[in-house]
Image 1: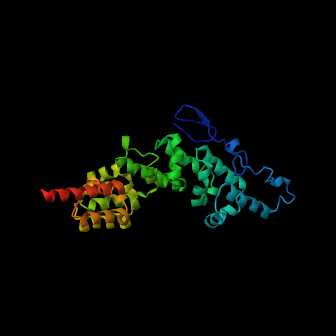
Image 2 (image 1 turned 90 degrees about the vertical axis):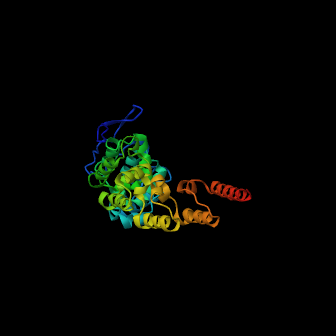
Image 3 (image 1 turned 180 degrees about the horizontal axis):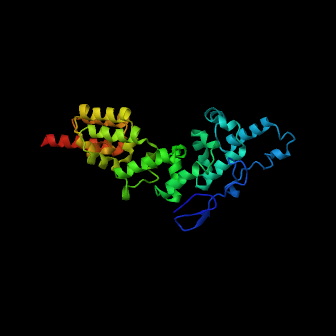
Length: 317
């Protein structure tokens, strides 16, 4: 089993061993050693002299300005937003930022993605990776069974994973989804780990219940969400209800069509569903949801022309 703990090794899928970060020798637990020498910041470059060479090293204002500069130029994070959402940033040492940066790098996350992740969740700037981040990576690797190379994909696709508690949020969501049917070939992958950040009682279960309220059986709903996991990410109020109403009242279709094409909910009501339905109605045609929505605009127009030509030829016979 992979364990991301100090002084341990974890095994990559290719069989190579990568040492996990060593515990800090610094008495301050929030400032452990760099996780990788190759990831040390570039503050000692000629254009960025170290503070030790500055006569006012003890000046807290200078230290703070250096930290802000590092945050904005090196990590590409909005310092004002960081200070507003994470007041602890003002007093944390710059080594805290470097430790978080090195932790993310050790899991394969590129520096180009740091800005977006840390700008979205600036509270990550001051966390202790050993107590907050590595338990999340350990959970994804050993319980969700996400391959190591795909960890970065999960994080980039859903940075919110990094601010979720394993025991309170991630593990209960995994249990619910596994019992629902996300097993075997349908197991959670880096493409669907975003489902783990959803509350079971507040988000996942209500959506299952709403679909059942339309007259679908539990088994039918399960089959739909396994085929189209995105269903569990859509809003009942802003997505499900208006699209169901349009399906039944305007399109005069049956709920059974949703069983055959649950991806219906992933298309824009105003941008695609209504315009295409309007064109079909204007020419007296009707298509199953799949044929109406899954094709490109060009393919849909070609199909519409073919149907019009066919109706004209039929009228000559």
